[in-house]
Length: 190
Image (cartoon, rainbow, N blue to C red; front, side):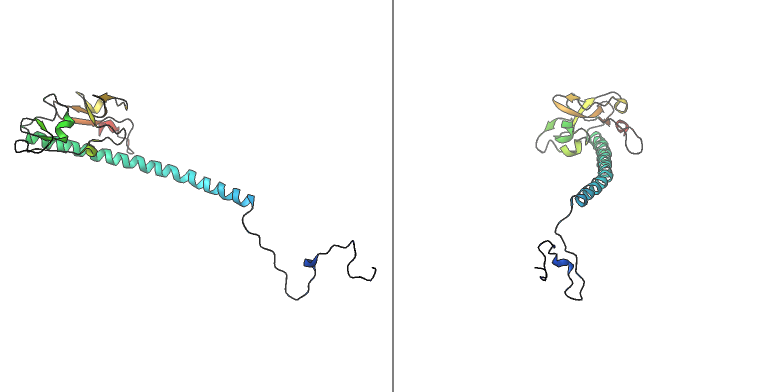
């Protein structure tokens, strides 16, 4: 045994022998280590914490833009209604103003679900045009001073969520929405 190349106690490490002039290449392992995975998770989490608030702000800005459009559109359609009904705003006869805006009307303000020869006016808006994007309300709540009303997302009028404060005598309208736009204007005063 003394002359044999391998001793019983000597390790058999064949990777240490150099049998050729080429360098031994390191062995590649498949997959990632736990530390590499944890590092990636931390980086992705940090990026998400930066990006998510940006999307939330853009959603709020989009709702503000929709609200301002709806307010302008409603005011324009209320003026159109008044022009076609001898100066009377929708709801001046005691009916809900949004019914006058959603359906066909005659010159006296009577409502019809379908267009007829004696109901030539309207509809002025669709349900989407009546919707307040912040609280999804479509109902009008009477108010003598809509721009200074107290917003409340739980107000209801005849079972429908209040989206708007409305003065039937003047035709003024304001959204039932708390908070302010990005330029600081209180939403209820748009």
